[in-house]
Image (cartoon, rainbow, N blue to C red; front, side):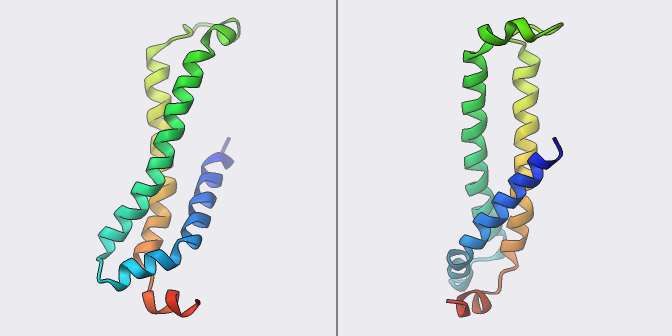
Length: 115
């Protein structure tokens, strides 16, 4: 289970590598580091929130089918439906925040020279 956050971070880093040029243009137009960081975090968290919402809807829809596998937990346990999405959102935030830090330190001259 440890490899899931690492996979999310790898996806975020890969997405960041693809977006280096647009980030360089934003930095080149005199955007400050917090603005670049905010742009990267908002992009990543948008994807994470969509995934969490789809997961909640899917879990709610499948409760009748998985009720026989649950012991000691109600199929529509409000604690599970609240804590797990918050936990996944926190992990997703960390997985997006680390590449956002890297993106805020991009030198636009070096990033644009590669094109």
